Length: 547
Image (tube, rainbow, N blue to C red; front, side, top):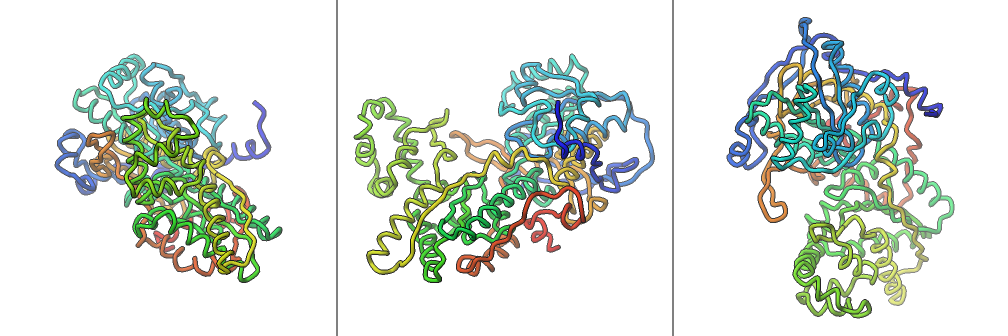
């Protein structure tokens, strides 16, 4: 395998660890916990793993541990730093006992069910330290939720003599980890299950999980590209750039990138929903900013748009719900309608309110709403080119305003979607350190006999030496939500808080950014150099922790 100069240099980087994890540790138990909501329902579903105490690791006396065997799974979408979670886990179990072994299940949870695995030896681990991606064992999206899957997994766990399983994933994957931990605890299988918080979207966080890993690197990667576009935009001075960013369920990425780059506009889905804005309200908001800059002679700018925006517009949400319902029951009839008549057919079948909204959409978007369904029959929101939808509708509104004498400029748009570009970037120093600490913490939770816990590393705006490592019961983060028509226990998603410090800092500056050209150009991620450049956490973390 040929390595780049950066890969060779990064292989030598030794991630920083919290002081408490550097020597022998003991687990200090804190308060008993309860779920964030629906306590009785969650307690009934998880009698063996509910109400467990918070754990903090502190320095202790050296203890001899027997060799253990651990399985590890990468679950769901990739996030920078996954390889370092595995490296930290490997180094942690080897420090406990040099004869400990680590097995990686191939291509996600499906590898456990299908008995597809490999032993991860030091030679393999060393190839992947401080690198991006999940390619050491691959990832997958198989959900672990059925009894036959748990039993099939248990066969290979017993065959290999595995004591504990570490699942590295987002909120759904860690929900599955919790269900698995409960199942194995109820059956007294002697198999521990530990989770690690991963998602670039940043929506897996709470008071004990300050940030999900990969968010730092992905936002720095996107911000570099946004900064480059803004430099181009400010050089040619003739385009409005509409930039869609990952984040279907929450707008953390868009908000963080706005704080880093100071674009002219950033739409925050949670605010759109809270203010009950219509699609036309959003379009008018953007068009007004374009018109205001045109008065100053500036016919250019940047707009950041979260991927999931459409689902947060209350009226669009209602339209999509009615469309999903109608097409689920009338798919065969709809398939018989001529392509040229499909739009009119749909308009004739919807309620007046939704028919009007559907009729106002550009042809291409209307088609995407009716044709592209997921296996559950729902519209695939990520396929809707929201950035083009908004720029098309802004263009129409500006043309109308021009006729009315309300707009004097020229409008030309460029479109971008930054998604996959950030998911497998080489982890920033922050993510390299944070992920290594999460993996190492998982090994200590296993050594202390814990199950149903998620690795927790806090105080992350301080130097790594001062980070606080421990564990949080996964049941503490759960509530009941309706999924596919029935109530299910799931980890509560963290949305952007409109009364939180990051959003307030953005809101305090956005009017000035909208009118003036206040762009910041962050440049590429720095791995070598002064600590204030290389180890800086996200603006979100700094503002949340007021540091």
